[in-house]
Amino acid sequence: MVFQTLGLPVFARGESGGWGQPSLLGWLLVAAVWWGVVSLVLRAWASSGLLKSR
Image (cartoon, one colour):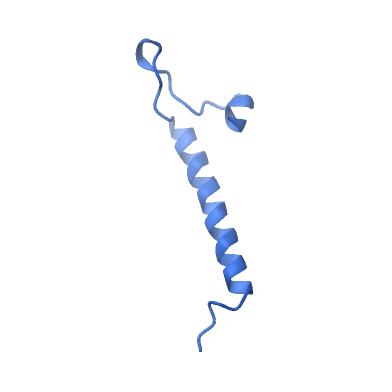
């Protein structure tokens, strides 16, 4: 919703007024958000010492 508010074409046009599939930009934005979430979790995990070998 944030990206749509900014005017980015997150969803392609739906056929006959229905729901459209995510556009290429939409998929890339979703992948970027998930990549950021995963990197933050891994950083937090590494800084807590859980990834160090015993």
